[in-house]
Image (cartoon, rainbow, N blue to C red):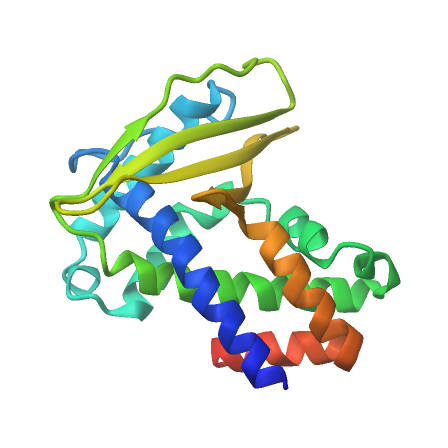
Amino acid sequence: MISDHMTALTRFSRLLLLGLALSLGALTMVHAEQSVDANATPDVFLEAVANNMLGAVKASPQALKGEADAIADLVRQYALPYVDMNKTTRLAAGRHWRQASQAQQDALTQAFTGTLIRTYSGAFTRVTVDTRITLQPFRGDPNADDAVVRTAVSQPNSAPIGVDYRLEKTPNGWKVYDLNVEGIWLIQNYRNQFSQEISRNGIDGLIKALNSKSGQ
């Protein structure tokens, strides 16, 4: 049933986005907002975005209390502009994307964005002052159009969690479009789930299911 599959999808997305939230939230200490250079090397770009997101959360009493709506607003302001949600959604939909009308593609992208913001915001409330992240040395070609930034997230009494980010160089600079937690890529997981939902209920059914989980 839709609810069963979407519940499983939500549980897994929370795991993935917990890794993302821990990575972004624990990267650095609070300081003044940095200027994000989307044309810098991928690791420098990602670090600046992370610093600003963390600083904004720590400057918000509501976010520090774990209020999801407050965190979601910060995600939209400080993180979402640097994520290519159109590409993320298109790759997650796979072959079904070409079968969708422009209106359906737009609606699916909006619904998927809402899902990721909601799960990301929920995961961000779990970041603690003891969380640490190590950026692995960037070994890719900074002049390439696609890059992976690798990190390791650690907390007391637990093994480090590997979190990798895949970025694409667009005309407007680097954009994040996928992430990997402990060997599992977000897009690939959603592609499997999306395909099942579309096979049963079509594109519109998937959009409805995603919106229902996001409270839209």
